[in-house]
Image (cartoon, rainbow, N blue to C red; front, side, top):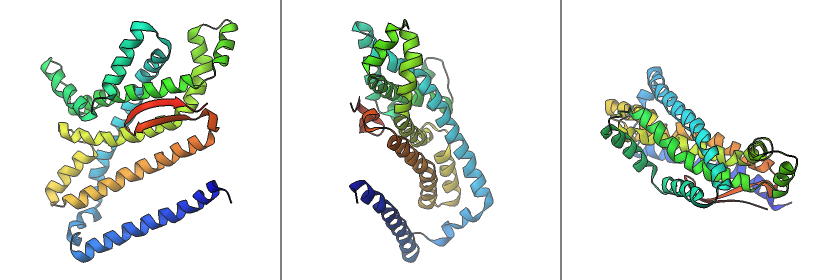
Length: 273
């Protein structure tokens, strides 16, 4: 039996152990009084889930808009990072590195308060979309750059020899292959983006965590509410994580884009070749 087969056989066991551990912790919490039953009663009401669902819709909407906008900005930035030379390249690289090196929370606060002082008043949700787009476009620019560099130079030269200019070569030859190889990294970044929407409540916005805060302020069940919110985020992010792994597993080893660094702070991005 290969090591890969052994690893696959161990996965269900590992998940089962995690489920058993979680159930054991919940039972221990009820038995010790740390999770009193009366604080869970509000979650038996349909109105509770309707209320939290409204917050979830806002979270998913912010995530979707920010991801699309990040791709629309990140792809041109990634192309510029890989194609430009000299001072223009330094400017693009400096911008990307500056944004990636800045904590996302700092970016959100600077945009929310800074633009207000300049006379441009944004709602908390609008500021969150701008901030998340700004940050994730810089991260995705590095992913795009890695994807472009993973394409064989021979294919690029062959396209140019056929008379295709830079734009057509990118659009017809390089980007279709690069985007396919970048798909796992893009899905992984979507997971990070969805989790980062929880920072919106610091700006006073109302998304899933903000709705949860209003909920536990009313019922006085802070711990229980955050447990439920954590489970909701897990239910969204875990399938995406599995999808990213499956996309990566379908790719040949020499076509995989390897991104190293923190999940929300890419340090380097290279191709295995």
